[in-house]
Length: 134
Image 1 (tube, rainbow, N blue to C red):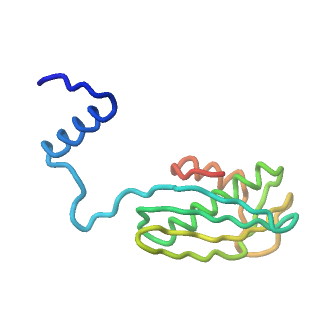
Image 2 (tube, rainbow, N blue to C red; image 1 turned 135 degrees about the horizontal axis):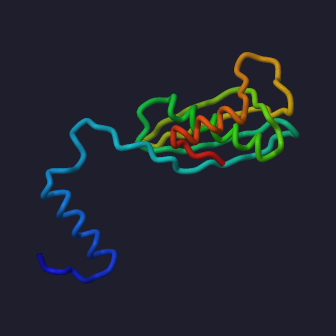
């Protein structure tokens, strides 16, 4: 095999040829792997935070919910709080791009309500699952 010169573009060309030769590539009907495309955080009040997350290659709405939950858990820890409570999450998908708009309260003590998060536990689970945080 001849050495291809050309830096990154040469390497890209080789990898594309290798993928084609190996019969690799997307399978019809298969979803691309999830891509975590970023988190925007906005403090609405002293303890009320809005998280806007964006993903592509998502299999379900639950993936977007998990991304927002991970962002909320890490944000609570960064602000010196141990807990968060889910208020609401709106999810929309358009052309394969998923956007979650979530609101959480953060607090130093376990808040009242059913959808509470122990920030340390959730952030650790997110790290184990490979879900990025703030």
